[in-house]
Structure formats: C-alpha cells, structure tokens
Amino acid sequence: MQTEIDKTEKVEERSYVSLSKTKKENQEPEDFLQNMPDVVCLSHLRWDFVYQRPQHLLSRFAQHGRVFFMEEPLFEEVSAPYLHLSPREDSLYVAVPHLPHGLSPKQVEDVQRQLLNELLEEQNIPRYACWYYTPMALGFSSHLTPLLTVYDCMDELAAFKFAPARLKELEQELFRKADLVFTGGQSLYEAKRDKHPSVHAFPSSIDKKHFVQARQEQPQPADQAHIPAPRLGFFGVIDERLDIDLLEALATARPDWHLVVIGPVVKIDPASLPQRPNIHYLGGKSYKELPAYLSGWDVALLPFAINESTAFISPTKTPEYLAAGQPVVSTPIRDVVRPYGDLGLVHIAATAGEFTEAIDAALLQKQDCAWSQKVERFMANMSWDQTWGQMVQQMAKVAAKKEKK
Figure (cartoon, rainbow, N blue to C red):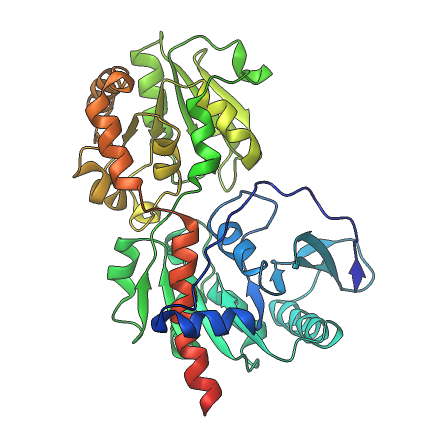
C-alpha cells in the first residue's frame, strides 16, 4: 500500500455539534462518540471531485475517530494492483485502488476485496462501521462483519445514465444487510421507506457560515469579472440532469442576460452543450471559491430536466443559494417544490416561458425584506451539524443494542 503524508488544506473552519451529557437521551450518542468505531466508507463518488454531502458528514466523524473513504478503482498501466492511501483532513484518509487494464468484472471485485482486507489489517481496523454510498460495493465487501452498517442513499443511482445492471439487485441485498438507511431527501425517503424497517429522511443541509460570505461584496474572480450583468448562475455537476434545452432557450430569448455555468461536465458530450455569446462555462471550482462567484450573481438557477434521473434528487445547492442571499428559480423538482416552492422561498417554473417570467420577478427580489426574513426563519435551524448529530443518535442506538448482545 502506498501512503502519501502531505495533508491538503482544510476547505473550511467547522464548529461541530456537542452532544451534551446533561440530558439522559443524549448519553448514548455521547458514549458512541467517545468510543466511536472507525468508519469505512465505500463510495462511487471521489473525495476530491465535488464537495457535497459525503464530505460534510464524514469530515464530522473524522473529528472523533478515523475515517477511511474508499473510492472506485482507477484503471492504469500498472504491473500489479495497489491501494493508494492518502490523508485529507484530521483522521480522514482516502483509499484509491489502482488496477491494471484488462481485468474481468469478477477479477475487479476479487482484487478490491483483497485490497480492502489488506487495508483493514494494515491499519488495524478491528472495530468499524461500514458506510455505503453505492450498493455496487457489496460485490467486494459483503463478507465484512462491521459493528453496524449504514446505507446513506443520497440518490436513486439506478435512474442515472450508465447505471450498472446489478445495481438494483445489490441494493436489495444492502437493504437486508444495513442496520440503518438514511435518504438524501423526502422523495427518496418515500420511495425507500417500505424497503427497510429503519429508514430516516435527512435532506440536504447547509454550511451557512461558508455561503453567507456571498452576501458581502467580494473581489470578482478573473473569469467572471468581465461578464456583464445581470448574471444568472448555476453551479454543480453538468450531466444528464441539466436541462440544456432550457439554458439555450433562456439565452436565446434574453440575450441581455448572461448565464454563468460552473462545474465539471460528466457522462455527456461537452459538444452537446449550447453555445451562445451569453452562456459562459467556467469549469469546475473548489468549494472554497463558490461564495466569491455567488456574490457576483443576480439570480441563482436550478435548471434541472424533469426526467427519471431527477425524480428523487434533493439539490444541496438550494439552501446554499438561499444562504448566499440569492433569489432562486427552479424547475419543478419535487424536493424543491416541497418545501421551498410551497413556502414561497423559491420560484418554480415548468417551461422556458415561465422560467423567463420567474427570473424577471427574481431580479427584483433582493430588495424584498419580507422574502429575506422568511428565508432566514426557515433556515434558522438548518445545519450539517444538526443533520450529522441526528444521524449519530440513530447510530448510537443501534451500536448500543448490538454491543450488549
């Protein structure tokens, strides 16, 4: 196993939840954190790709114990497979399998199983919790006997483009194996609640301290500074979930508006993206950079297509946009309509014409004190600290029961 000793810079300061011992109901979580098992996370997402739900949650666990985040393999010109282990934050390590080309699917699983076993042995991980983001990882980890197993189901992966054929089958196996199932939104909870006896909805939350920086005037990034106002912005992964026809229609209908699109392009051909003088693709940006870009926007957009891949999404960027003080216009994604649209916090528009009208209204909204106050009240108790703390409470109950047996 190869190990890298240089730590990357932390992306944010964090103030984590203290689960007080003064209340009897908090004793189990407090005990759990004081004697927390190592967390072995098996993920289809890469730690250094986009900073989102896994990073927010697992970084908090790393404040109390070791976290090992195992990614999908990279296929390279290597003579023998190996696992590259590198630190990111306090007690958090990213493990990346490097495999040679030409292996069969069974060989890929066999090698990952061997590398995972070596990780557990070499890092002395006898007591641990397994935290799954993808059921596909069961192909090489089903033999493990963790203290507890959590399936943090943040997306309906089977609906995504290029989803593996075995995914649904392995998800059923993961439901049988898991002690707890967490879902990334209310719609996903409603779809999964009958699949397991202990399913809990934990919708996207917010690091307000980070995004509220966008409410203050900031020096504009060089690649955005020259773009005329009004600027309508989107950040996130650019894939089959983005309604590129809607982007083109907006840009064509209103050439005086400038659309700023931030994020990596994956699973779709970049050449398929609409090209207009007033659409600006700025590429991927770090989590740390996002407030500076947001501060220069006039309206934030959620221009998602309404299709199978977006049926259960709960965009993390919804509360992030609002914390930044940005008016938001979204297509009718269910977990945006409920509750943000229903409460009048976000404009919902189903067609290009409605979207254009909604943007016109949103451009006047920053001066609407009643709207701003409504947003503040709604988000007053939202935080990743709170979400993580509630997850810990569920985990502590399960761990306490299993360790008493």
